[in-house]
Every structure is written in C-alpha cells, then in structure tokens.
Length: 510
Image 1 (cartoon, rainbow, N blue to C red):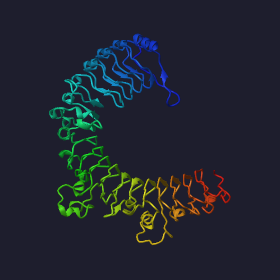
Image 2: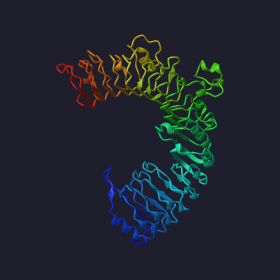
Image 3: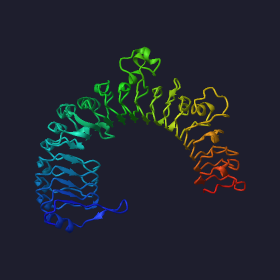
Image 4: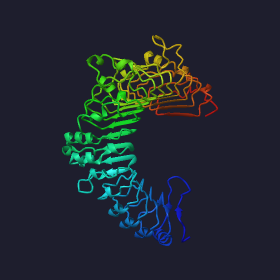
C-alpha cells in the first residue's frame, strides 16, 4: 500500500449520499501514501484538508470536487509537480491559498460552481502553464486585478470573469488580452447585479470594449452589464464561429448589434433588456438604410438573417413592442416570457421547423403572427391574460390552412404536448382537439373562466390529462375518454362544479 500510485475513492449508492471520511482516516491516508500521483476524493464528505497533503511530493492530480471543504492549507503550494487541481462544486470554498501561486507546473485549475469563492489568490499570473482556469474573480488590490490574466496566454476552453465592476483602470482589460487567447471557446463576462450608485455606465462600456474575445469564440454570455451600448466588436460577422449568444440583465442598452449576420449562431437568449423597444433592421443586418425598416425579413441581396438559428429566447423585455425576425426556417424552439408589449402585428413569423413553443406572460396578439407551424410537437401557454379562446387563425396556422373559416376539417398532424396555465380570461378550448392526432399530453391549470358545458372530444392518442383549478368546467361526459386506450394519467383537482353523476367510463389502462 505504501507504494500506491493512484487512489480514487468512488461512491456507489443512491444519488445524494456521499462517502464519509473522518479527519483521522484522511490524515492517515495522506501520511502513509507518500508516492501517490493521483488522489481523488470527489463527492466524499470532508470539510477540511490536513496540512500533510503538502508532503505528497509526487502528486500530479488532486480532486476535491463536490466536497464541503471551506479552505485549502497553504502547504498545497509544496506540491511542485501538481498539474491538475479540481475544486468544482465546492460550494463552501471561500478562498484559495496564496501558496497555490507557487504551483508552476499547474495546467488545470477547475473552480466552477464555487459560489462562495470571492477572490483569487494574489499573483495568479505566475501560473504561466495554465491551460484551464474556469473562473477568475476580479479584485481591486495589486495582484488581484484583471490584468493578472496577461501572462496566462495558453488559456483554453471556458472562462468565467466575475465582478467586472471592480475594474478601475480600463487598461487592465487591454492588458488581460482576451483577444490573444486563441484557445478560449466559452467566455462569460459578469458584473454584479444591483450596484446602485456604484454603477458607472461609461466605464463599464469602456471595460466591455477592452474585453474583445478571440476570433474563434463559440459561446459568449454578457450578464448584468450597465452600459447603454454594446461594444463595436459585437457588431459584425467577424465572429463566424459563435453558436450561442446570451445577453442577460442589461437594463440600459437601447439597441442591439447586427446579430443576424452571425453565420453559425444557433442559440440566442435575450433576457432583461428593459430599454430595448424595437428589434430593427440593424439587428438583422449591418449597413441597411432607412428603407430597410419597411421589411425586416430579408437582408442585402435577399439573404436570410439568422440562417442557422435553432433556439430563440426572449424574456423580460417589457419595452419591446416589435418585431421579431420573420423568417426563421431552422428555428426548433421559441420561448417568449414577460414581453407584454411584443405583438408582431406587422408581420408573420414563418417557423416551419418549430418543434417547441413556450409563451408566458405576454400578449395574445403574438399568437396571430405565428405562421406555418407544421412541425410543432410541444405547446405551453402560461399567463396569457387576454387570451379568451383559440381562434381559427391560430389553430389553422398549426396546419398551414390559411383562410379556414371553420375549425371543422382541420387535422393537425404534429402537436404532442399542450399545456395551458394561468390564462385568467380564457373561456373556451378549440373544438378540434380530437383532430390533434399525435397529442399525448393535455394539461390545463388555473383557468378560472374556462367555461365548458361539455368537454370537447379528446384525441385517442392521449396518455395524460390534467385539469387543475378550472372552476367552470361542468362536464366531461362526452369527451370520449373511454376510448383513449393509451391514457395512463388522469388528474382532476379543484373543479367544484364538475358533475360526478354523469362521469364517463374510464379506459382500463388507468
């Protein structure tokens, strides 16, 4: 045992349990196994690392991830051959020892999901061989500033930079030289939220300008940015490899750069952009004149913006009135939340590939602009306060039957899941439910004005039906539920006037 080279403790058992190792057992292990190269206590129940860990002079790999340790001893700096230190998920870890900056062989420092970690050790720029530094917390004192990243030229993978409001000199951002770190693929730029009078919007704008990512970046997130404009480096097609872009809680930004010409963009997430009113032609294409405001569907030479976009999220943009890009041929998932003014009344959204649609706390008018939803399988509607009924315009768009005046004869082929909740004035359901020939789940929650004398017939494919807090549903006697031979779940809650006397027979699958 004394010449053991690798010790990896693996927990086998129910999820959520962890392997308990007493302080004495851990101390004995470390003092007796002097030749360890690899030591992993991942998911073990320990709160303290003994000083004797520094005696493992041959150690290359040390893993304390998902433990409850609060600190590491300074003796960690004596591990002169250590190449990888894994601290991911150590939620109680509040500080890294200064000795860590002596680990000149260290290549991999994983401190993801360490929410209590408030600062980096002074002098982390000494670790010039680092290729992975998953998180950097900016400080104001010498040795803790953003410019400490300058010498870490080999960084690759992902990098979270937190507390950017502490950057006092914009030159620190320039010195950090993110643009020169060509191995970075994911970059997260975070300012703290609710800074109040400490917020300096002009400085934040200059700091963001100085943090231009490398040209091959694939995933970019900007969070809690307090400037009024986004940086010029975001405006253009030079970042041809970006596949995911998230702009969250940037309350003072009034306009968006020309993201429409990012050729590889697959996911775009816009959240908490309180001051953005109109997504205009500049958002779609750069250098479009005023005539471009007439139509937002096409760019120069009839090219289609967002040609690869698959997932679009628009959340908590209360001032946004119109309009979304209207030609999104590859969009698979669309989520619109808390955008009460967004109505898209001036154009139709053509979404032939859309598979999932989520609408919450927004105007019912958005439904009228949806067009050609021939691939839709999941529809979830929550808190559409003005929604009274599903009119024929929306139901027909599911099957691309333009101009249909009656719901009779519409056969929707694709819809599999329909969830409706908190629609306070919705009074009826579409009578063509039984023609949703692939529908497996129909869940309706908290629709107090949904007044149904006789529930419409259900599709035979249904496997789950939930009616919850629908106080005006009177009868389901003729809903054909007895023939739903795939039904395995039926839940009815708080439907006080539902007539039990004429309750229909139920299928044997329940």
